[in-house]
Amino acid sequence: MVLTDTMQETYTIGTWAAGGTDDAGCRWSVPTTDLRNGTGRKTHITERPFGTGAYRSRSYLAGRSMSLQGWCMPTVEPSWPLLVAARRRFMGLFPEGSQQLLVVDDGVLPRQITVELAEAGRKWDWWPANGGADWQLDLYAADPRWLSTVERSASATLATVAADGLDWENGGLDWGNGGLDWGSSSGNNILTMVNDGSATAWPLLTITTPSTLQNPTITDPITGGLLAYTGTIAAGQTLRIDCSPFSATPVTLDGIDRTGALGSSRFISIPPGSTRAVQFTGVGAGTVVATWRDADE
Image 1 (tube, one colour):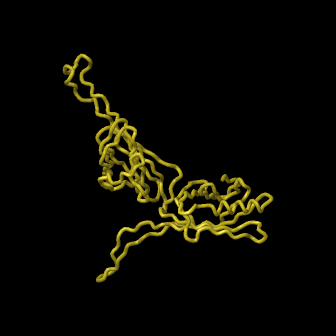
Image 2: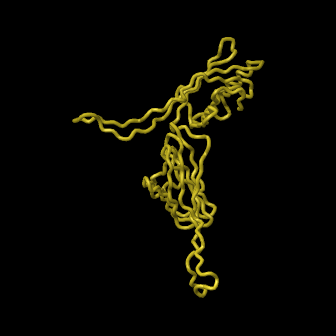
Image 3: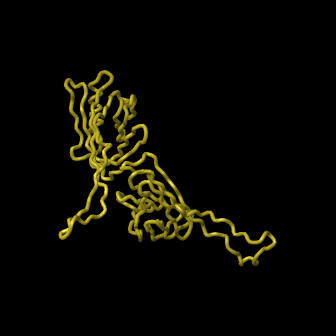
């Protein structure tokens, strides 16, 4: 659904959008929302039984509850069929058990978050004489971070077996053609990732090879984070390692779950406002591509 005559901020879920007039001729206003509020923290505190204060461990972001409230009013006649269709679109949001992306565009820094219906769900109240309706959408985000709508990427490579040594098989050294030629290495196995947001970001790592690659490993020398895959990737195969703790299947090879083949699984993260440079190693040739989004609270 495309909005025209947009207001200050637009909200999009699938084909439904609010914050302007949709292409069916209904104006969706959102005068009330708590989306700009921060999320809470999960604290882990135990009172000290024989001393002042309490013991604590690190706190983490809690899941986020949020609400959109507004009104819908047709801008053309006949209005009743437009309202009936508008309600049907609204009530059709979130088929049972599904999650969808909520995209909020303030004209400056668009952000997205994965949401599902909260317990209160959807509400629709007709106005007198059915000239419009008030609506409310209560949502929940298990992952409370707002992610950039722009995806970042970076890559690193492992070169094939280098031809930069001495060849003793074909008659020794040929001094008549300029001495020793050590060649050049085509591999750059350092992967650099930047997160300009205010919350932790987790990359998706995609590893491929032109021939074979055995036991690929990703190492973060700063934190000691280590991803060590035990196995061989053949030409044409794709290994994906999703570092997000919200991933149901962190490791797949051509779509098949291979999480059990991850010998070490200290997943890589990119702290807020930070840069992470990790090292890609393995036996053979390969390329790793990392994709991620800046994250905010």
